[in-house]
Image (tube, rainbow, N blue to C red):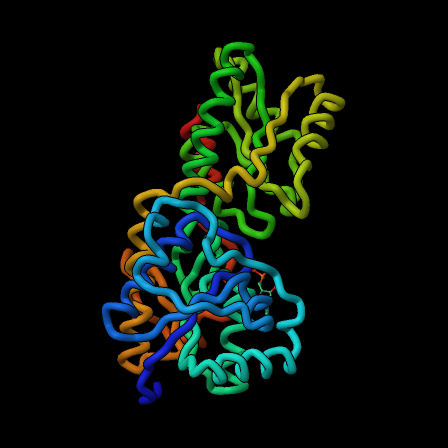
Length: 327
Ligand code: ADP
């Protein structure tokens, strides 16, 4: 907790973009303006901060963006920010512009960078979880996840049309290099026969049994959701191995970056708006460094130290749920 009166703030987006980031930016900017706080936008995340790509924003700067995916502030990955000297320079730039606090919208990596700014320089920071992976430590939800799941689910629905028309099995690969969350939710919502997490090992016999069970019970088509894994394309290998081992033919569809873009859903717009609004009020109340989290169904501010780390594996038993409901 600190008592410093916040008169001027800056906001940036960092790491992977996520639908709904614009809603959070809009809420941060408009709440600041309403409360008489000067507000600056930083382009391209920490890279733009180090390059002094900072501009003042007003209520009109964020007009007509609530429905747009991506981030108007753009984003980046900035390896330099891992270095102490870069962070010293960042704080110097912020102070030179009389900016009193920084709001970072991003994932675990971006939060680690923000919290280090506070630890090393006592610079006031607030985090807003924004990533399609829903894997931010300390928050049950991250902005962008619902939209990504919705996009992937709609794509699977379309794949199902052609799968049923041709009596085909499909492997649909969804995003989530380190997070199982998208695969699990899309698996349940699209009625998938099976979900594969390549990093946990691939049980070909089990996949075969599930697909065969569907065929034997008169199914016209089956869908298997595959978590992307270390790099996209693992589904081709799975499909080929299944053919070699069991003579079972299947097709592959990799959804890729389509899942990152698009109009944010109402859930993402609502949560992002509340998180942005609460972040400014937290700064005004001296409640920093902190993170605007979503916990037990509510947007709640939490101390930053409770939100840096690696989240436990996504342990929802949704794989079994998808499997049982797809008989
Ligand atoms: P995300 O925020 O979506 O998890 P990244 O892990 O790529 O995305 O992190 C985004 C950026 O945050 C990095 O490019 C880097 O600039 C900064 N960052 C990540 N980890 C740290 C760290 N431990 N210390 C300082 N900055 C970090």
